[in-house]
Length: 264
Length: 356
Image 1: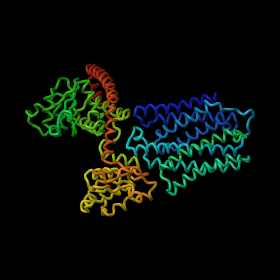
Image 2: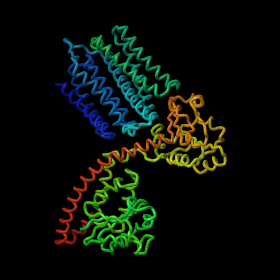
Image 3: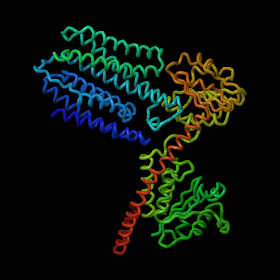
Image 4: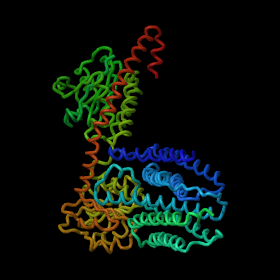
């Protein structure tokens, strides 16, 4: 039953994707309220789904890969709803919605919603570690999206070929400011997430710890390059995409290889 | 009720003819004396048009004479052969909708005409020359113009070199208030571009020219500060926008000499507008990280792209207009026939309709 909520949520995000796609194809892209409303509605259904699932489990719904993907999609939408108003709201939504559709679509189609045969006891510190880390991933996802927007804008300015979307993208300097802030938000949350992982009262798999620290170091290097002005904005934007891909791979690895890590 | 439009525009008359009627804006009272129940004059630099509603037909010549009485031309004989056009009923409605939406403008999609139309409407309404017919027509025209702007890309981008440069600067820097601009060479186009940047908030403007006197003059005109020509290179590490239009035969800026100038500003973009012919900046500079170079051809190409997009949008805009024309004519005929029925029974009701 709760999966229907998720399907409706995915349809809402898909509506935003389709509308943007059609508008771009017709060369008529215009930011409007539709994308924000569609994403807002999708976010509401996601929240209701996670709430129902959480009540059923008696804990934060992060017990299998399916729930991790949904929680990640929810984090992306949450960060978008929080930071969107500061920038070009519906335009960032146009880039955010496809990512959420991919995450939720995959979670719905792939046979990864495996319920545990026994009820898993709640572990508040582990749940805190997992949920804070996933919200950090949401911020990194938005930084990645802002990075894509920056590269699209930069490319058009360099080649002098200005498409319809160019006129609706925020200025380069504003996008770069957004990337920087999202990176800091994600980095601080991720640091808290990693640090709290050491206080879960469970032994930590060495490979996962090393991989998590590697991702942390990558983002630290990006921020250091940005802070000391050693890295050009274009490179920072590109590294945001690389960083989020690495983080997503790590998340996949952690959850897939050791599903029980977040369960027990 | 006869709804009509009589006028001349850039399509039918040259500027000499149009300027003879430039003073016709206040002709509404004369037009009403000539038999127009309602009248509105729209006079801009590209058109002089009379929109009217009358019980009996008022000829084009009579309208032209009314315009002449208030304009510079006063000899009725001079009205003969003037390229006036006349649209009635549906064609008049369609014409106004096209005018208000910028489809009939010299630069397709320009938005200034909507403001001018609103101003003309307010002026005629204040003078009491606008009745229910023109009131509804113009209110609908404003709605149509808004819808065309919202649902098509008819107003997208800029179509002049100066405004393209300013738009691009805003796409790179956002607010221009904190940007520093260096104008290299005191050419006419660079002055126009500098003025456009100042109008969008630039306050730190520097001017450098081979002739210091001309540089100082330009700096004074645009509210900037003059910089000695042998010091312009040092300025490049501080500025955000460079407008260059010198008469140098060889490029002043190449990747080799620009590299050290921008080495310490890795996170700050540099926008170079090169409007000199031959070019002052080596095109290879555009390949440098964080440097955006637009020469005169690139700026023109962007302007042409915008214009091409606007032209592509004409069909969509025409479709919106056609829909509104049909709907408006149906509604107005229904409302006017109802109003005339009420008038036969109660004259008070007619006043309320006029006031609405």
